[in-house]
Length: 166
Image (tube, rainbow, N blue to C red; front, side, top):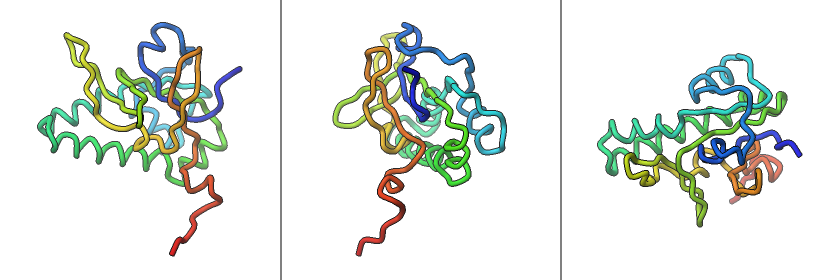
């Protein structure tokens, strides 16, 4: 059964071990966002690379401590807003692509943790929570392994729109 349209976050190792089918098209995160925001061609299936390393560079450039983590949070929030703004969302809902974001490190516990693996010892470094980047992350299976899946809608849209609570 082919994957449902939406965003998936998968570990690079899952793609390398062929557990997750590799889409024919590979794009950088910047190329994908540029195509999405400026009307470029979106493939039916895309492997989007470079998010983890881009965020690691942000982390390093801002001092690797609390300031680095805060800078990463700001970038993750900005990227999420870009993916889920009304123009992008309408386009994604119309074209229904399957988008796989590859990350070096993903861990599912109480929350989805994501980041990079620090060489040479391959130690994981958590940079952000996937729920911040892909709202409504849920566990789904691809090739018998758990991956993170998010539809093209924010959580409040599942409730039927914005509700005023007060």
